Image (cartoon, helix red, strand yellow):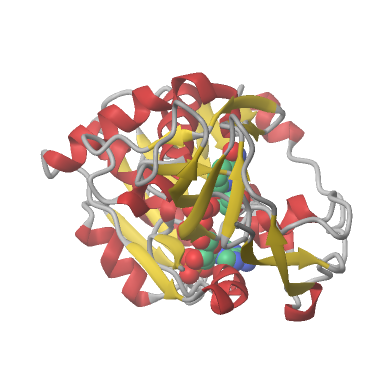
Amino acid sequence: MATKIRKYVLRSHFSGFPQRDALEIVEEELPPIKDGEFLCEAQWISVDPYMRPYTSRLPLGITMIGTQVAKVVESKNDKYSPGDLVSSNFGWVTHTISDGVQQWGGKQGPVLKLDPAIHSSPSTALGVLGMPGATSYFGFLEICQPKKGETLVVNGGAGAVGSLVGQIAKLKGCRVVGFAGSDAKVKYMLDLGFDAAYNYKTVESLDAAIKESCPNGVDLFFDNVGGEFFEVTLSNMNEFGRVSVCGAISLYNATEKPKFRSVSEIILFKQLKVEGFIVARWLDQWPKAFKEISEWIKEGKVKYDEHVTEGFDNMFDAFAGLFTGDNTGKAIVKI
Ligand SMILES: NC(=O)c1ccc[n+]([C@@H]2O[C@H](COP(=O)([O-])OP(=O)(O)OC[C@H]3O[C@@H](n4cnc5c(N)ncnc54)[C@H](OP(=O)(O)O)[C@@H]3O)[C@@H](O)[C@H]2O)c1
């Protein structure tokens, strides 16, 4: 039987702050499934900052990209049964026919079946126990190589990635200083156990805030924001510091290229290790991260929050809210 679906199609590339009419909701019919295939119905869809820069490189007419948690409703594939919950890059679409294979950052992998022992709440597969969780885990532990007593600065500190980075750093014995965009988020970071937290929108000077909260300098920097924040934090780093360049959300909507300003002298004379990464680098190791993070959650050592928007029709608002700071914790849409 044919299935009616709804999906968001990319009609134009975003220019500056994301425009609603760059995406159009289109209705379609899916054909019956064939041998080896299964039909999924979306339960939760993720909105993530990377969608903004990535879509500018993608052809118009594609289904908007993104990960979802979906329920298998019909199957002619031995590995997936009706009722199974899966996580995959199906995009902003209500239903999908899959053959069990998905692409991740140029790598191929299976459509993941959720493990109830790990994902006791299915939506976590899009956040703390999904791609953002793996980003925090590997991006911080592998690149910053934290040592007890070191000081970390993390921005985007109340978001999906940054809030977990700060908590992992605390578990590793670091002093953690977080930055985010509201006083409520400052309280949230302090409640999570950060040693100091600032509202970057109201501090008189980022440089003074870092100097005040990091009297012994910055050893580790996990950057979600980029731009001015990157420059200012770098100049406060100690020799042999490590910098994990995770994201640059302050630049994603920029319409003008910033004037060139060299940071190479700071990196050189302080002998910093600065490394950018895409989390798919560790794709085959993600289950290891999810196991350890889920244990930390069960033991009460890690807390997470989700910012839930209701309804497929409100996907754009949830996405745009990432750039106005609407979310504390992981932004997700309940379909
Ligand atoms: N390298 C990778 O593989 C990888 C993987 C996942 C995510 N990332 C990156 O990690 C970063 C965080 O992602 P996430 O999923 O955890 O998102 P998130 O932090 O949950 O949500 C985005 C947050 O960014 C902040 N923000 C928006 N515009 C800003 C600006 N101009 N300056 C400073 N902060 C701004 C907002 O919080 P405020 O209220 O604090 O402004 C907003 O809530 C993003 O840069 C993303 O691209 C990278």
